[in-house]
Image (tube, rainbow, N blue to C red):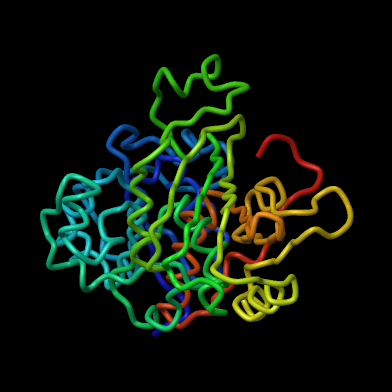
Length: 347
């Protein structure tokens, strides 16, 4: 395959669509041929995304898809499953950022979503998170990016499974804090500045849909709660783990280094010096890095595992591009090997 590929973005006017366009614009192997939007058809990309005003590209109708090598689809849940045939006709590789192909069985969509109209595609899709599913991504032609809350949680807990510290039968309580960009670009009363500013608001105390991904890919049922907090970008997961036997700090370091020592976008931050002693979304804002860390509470036989990502990068657009790089045989860090800023305001 040529090292220079064409790409398109369906749903390019949303927050995640804008992130995809930003990443693809700076990617050495992708030329962006098309970005679609029903609401902004014929408007320039820079009209919606001011950081992309330099792009000579206008939004087109999603009904008029051009033929490209890779099509990224940043659509609301339910849209991609309705149009997957058209998407695959337009591109050899489709990377979907919705929830439509993340789970492997139709029964899961009946339980957690509103059913599925083309369940035959579920067994064909590959979960995008490379740290979890790298070996299955090369050559994949339908890739499903993970949910940001699930991604943060899976990244934090995966080393404990890899090292045998967890088997899946233990009690695990997960509390996730997320920024306002998770809600997308659509306006609502709850997302208006006056209502959103200054909050720590439980918006999914139980039954969050991302629990389905955690259960499928880790084999673990978690007690899961999500809070909306006063930041724009980021997802931070705090996992309270109660293992069956004693676990030392050495065991934990061995587990995290074993899982992520060779991963280009993972960093372990666990109680060191300085201000940022544990993972924080502010430390990874705008990047594809994920940070993980831990602390041990021997008096309560508890492990506390922390993880932080940028929800629109590692939790969405960055994960999608990372997975596409691997699927297409490109350098997996291509277009993603940049660092964030410090100091920076609310991410």
